[in-house]
Image (cartoon, rainbow, N blue to C red; front, side, top):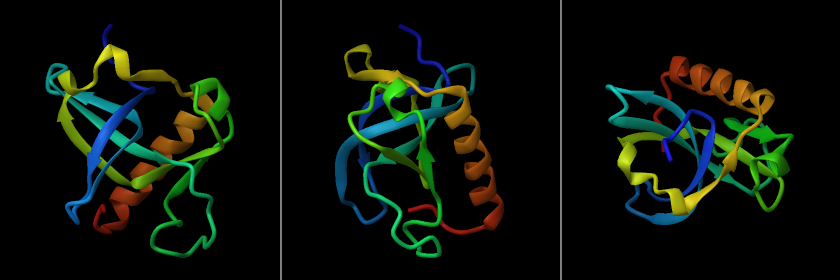
Length: 120
């Protein structure tokens, strides 16, 4: 299986704090001749404060079922990284994000990058 942009996988994410957890992630970029993949984390935690540090960059996935996610979910556009594409194994594949949701995710990641805020 080749990893494609828009694919959703289970992946163990390590945050800047050193804390790590296994959670769904979406592939939003593939670069360097398919050596690196960019991913953003997905959460089931609802948006509670649109201006809050943790919530203002969450992108709701309106078609979360079509991505084979178990519950309503959000992509954290401020929580992304690039890692070797080989880290994404076929057995950890969840599904594929709809084009509609993926377009919203990309737009918000671009807005976050332009904001000059620090990813977490």
